Structure formats: C-alpha cells, structure tokens
Length: 405
Ligand SMILES: *[C@@H]1O[C@H](CO)[C@@H](O)[C@H](O)[C@H]1NC(C)=O
Ligand SMILES: *[C@@H]1O[C@H](CO)[C@@H](O)[C@H](O)[C@H]1NC(C)=O
Image: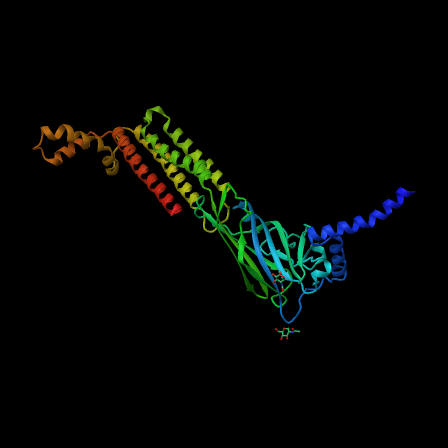
C-alpha cells in the first residue's frame, strides 16, 4: 500500500520534468503541435482559394527540380521525365502566434489539409491528372501562412521530334504546366529566381542534358509555366550499328568489277550486297519516326546508296551480256571508247618508241580494229569501279559534314 502511493506521487513530477526538458531541447512538444493543428486546421476551409484580397490574384511561385530523363521515344514523339515542382504561396486563412505553441514556427501537414494549386501538364500524352495527385504529399505551413509543397510525378509529354541529323541530333522538348481551371485573374504563376534545379538529376546514358530553362508567361487567359529541355543523343550505337555496315558494304560493292565474268559470281555478289542494304534500311527505319518532316538524312543517304548498288547490279548484268556477244557484231562508238582503254596504254608502251613518225590517225585506226568485246568489258569494269568509288566517298563525306556541322 505504501509503495503504490509513492508511484502515484512521482508520476506528475516526471511528466512536468519531461515537458521542461522537451521545451529546452525541441522548442515545442507534440502536445503543442497537436493543439496547433486542432486550433488552426479543424476549422480551416481548404476548398476556398486562400487569397486575402480577391481583386488581386493569388501569387504562386514555382521552382522546378528536374530528377530524371527516363526515355525519349522518337517514333511516338514522347519524352518521359521525372519532375518535382516546389510550389510556394501565401495561405491567408492560416496564421498563429508561435509563442502560444512553444515557439512552433511551422507545421508539416498532409496535402489534404490545405488548399494546393492543381498543376496539370498541358502537353501530357497520358493523363490530365494534377501533378502528384496520387501521392499523399506533405506540405509545410509557416506561422504567417506562407505554404510550400513539393508536387512531383513521372510525366510523359509530347515532344515534336526533328530527326534530320539522326543519329547526331539534339531535341528540344517543352513541358507546359497550367493551374487547371484558374485563370490569370485568380492565380498568377511566378518563376523562382533560380527556376530550375538539377542537384538531384540522374543522367541518362542515351541522352545528355545540354541545356534547360524555365519561365512563366500568359497564354490566353491562363498563366503557363514552361520548362524547356535540350537533350543530345549519344550517337555511338547508331554510328557503329548502322553507319559502319553501310559504309563497309558501300566500299565492298564495287569490288564485283574485279571478279572475272567467267566465275559467274558477279551478279550473285552484287545482289547479296543489295539485299544487305535493304536489311539495314529496315533496321534504321524502325529507329526513326515513320512520318516526319523533315526526313532523316540517314535514310536518304541509305536510299541513295541502295540505288547505287542497284545500278551496279544492272551494269554487272549488262557487262556479262557484252562478254558473250558475237565478235562479228557491230560495236557502237561509246563501247569502242571503253574498249580502247587497254590499247591506248599499249600504244604508249610499245608503239610510240618504235614508230614515232607514223601518223596518229593510222595508229588510232589500227587499234580500233583490234578491240574485242572482252576489252570493252574490261574497260567498262575499270571505269565503273573508279566512278563508283568517287561517288560513294563523296556521298559519305557529304553526309558526315552535313550531319555533324
Ligand atoms: C484589394 O486590392 C485592390 C487592388 O489592389 C485595392 O484597391 C483594395 O483596396 C484592396 N482591398 C483591401 C481590403 O485591401
Ligand atoms: C513568412 O515568414 C517567412 C520566414 O519568416 C518569410 O520568409 C516570408 O516572407 C513570410 N511571408 C509573408 C507573406 O509574410
């Protein structure tokens, strides 16, 4: 019985002592905060815009925290980003005297306890749900009513793609936010002096963030917050997987002119190269938007290369037909010119030193008489190979100069 009274006597003393200790260490106790919450938020009408003077709009300050660039899809023309927006405004319905609540100058409350601006991504491709609507965010309210909350989400936005210089392209995407339903007369948006923060940004390995900026402007009746991002593609993958095979096949293709016609492999080889090009074109087509304005220069480059490869097939077939032509058949002047190549070289080496005084016309006449179909084929092969190499090197250089400059 004696023991029991002793405990009963000690209990209030411990409570008072702990209260004093808490006050010294933390400034306020949970009792203070609970009392503050009861006093301020139970009667708070969060449905009403917390404006003191309704002839002036409520000023909302925004600061964008760019968190990730998850994906950029050129075919769908969408950019997936992780964005948080620090939203600050003055909540006029809330204020308290800190000294009445253990010097509590701020309180952390659920988003559902206060009015929050409903920011909506205008160029969203998935939903017009307000930013961070599904998260039960916590907001901070200061004793003078100044409130702030982080609204964040993973966003998919429409972004017009320009793949002219693919895969050396840069894309500029804009994310436009608006306070859904509230016009410029009710709410104005202001960008923070440091409008974009990338402290928490996690880089993407396919795209590097080149530049970013944020501003607010009036569009029609609504204030818009605009975040624009410029991202640059890492071109290595497409350069190796598409560019190198195209260039290598392009350089391999004219070697068919070195194959002897008798081997019978010429048409086969040139067709194989043509088909390989077609496969690579399909690969590039899948990576590039199907309907875009302007078209990707890489596709144009590949189609020109395929066209040249097709010409090679045609020339190869034509040369094979010339090779087996009847020797008695008449030769036209162009084919004679191609066929005379070998003889002109011979004349320089053999004929000229011995018969210097013979008239040139006679020499020409005699060589022309000896031109065979084999000579014509040989000449055509050499000319076509040289011309093709010049064209392919010129096109490759032109492509890389246009695309990288
Ligand atoms: C509200 O704002 C208007 C315009 O600035 C001003 O004329 C008016 O006096 C203000 N009213 C109060 C009660 O402050
Ligand atoms: C409220 O108090 C904070 C900190 O003391 C201050 O930065 C802010 O400007 C105040 N807001 C208003 C509306 O007075």
